[in-house]
Amino acid sequence: MRSFKRFFISFLISFCLFESANANSDLENELDALLLENDEVPPPPPLPAFGPDKTIPSSPSTPVIKSNPSSVQVAPTTVAKSTKRTSEIYVDLDQRINRLLERLEISVPTENPLNQHSQNNLSATRKSSRPGSFALPPDSSVQRFAPPPLANNRFSFYLGFTIPNDTTYSRNGNHDLTFQNGYELGVDYNFRFEDDSYIGAFLEGKFFDTKSVAGSSSKGSNRLLNIGFTLGQDWSLSDQLALITEASMGGALTNYEIDADHYSVKDFTFYYSFLLGLEFKWNESWQTSVYYELDGRASADRIDYQSFHQLGVETGFGF
Image 1 (tube, one colour):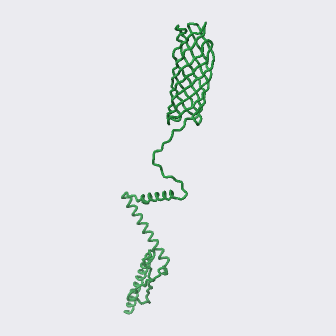
Image 2 (image 1 turned 90 degrees about the horizontal axis):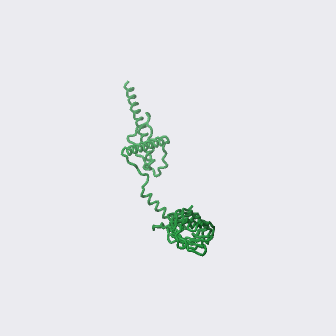
Image 3 (image 1 turned 30 degrees about the horizontal axis):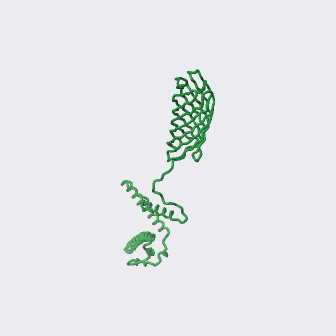
């Protein structure tokens, strides 16, 4: 009976020592696998398994570190388990850090803006110094640009004061015929070329009254309807100012009245004009000018040649 008890107790002790040795062996294998992944310490050879029929050594032997860690063979299952556990630890740690940063409301920059700025400067310097490059350095001076030219087509309106010169009236001899000051208004269309010259057409009307005939006062309403063609040139003085020179010719439909002599005539005669003006350009589509014009018409029936002086304002729109 005593021998049976001794045998049973010895068997329990051997079994406990066997399980403890196997657990320590698994733990050491996992630690050695982690060290092997970090290239620190190669794993030692596995400890021998102890059974009931094996003798337990008094003290474990010290493992010998080999010079070539890659030659050590590690059980695939052990490495897979340790790798999985390591990745889980890293993932859990990263999630904790992110939650902490969210609580503290701190944003983590992905890259240093100073480094990014210096990299941009470096890349720009490399591009500018690249052989065969024609890039010019930026000009810090103020750039001055001339205003865009006027549109090719221009439609204008003008209004002016007219001063009729004296003329002669033929009735049983020549008599002086004088007129009062009047006004004129008209429209014109011009087509402009690249050298600022232009051609066009115009239509205008003059309105003035008779003042006296042969020294005697007389009344009468007079009007001229002029139509013709224009040839002109703009001479630029600055970006906004230009000098205008213009010549026109065409025909005049006249209507004269002399109440003192009960005379009235309608005639169509030759018409001409010369114009000198100063133009101001508001923008590429709008301009305004002041002008002086000398024009005249040929004789009409009993009324001799007559000339006029005009001072007026013109404004036009380009398209």
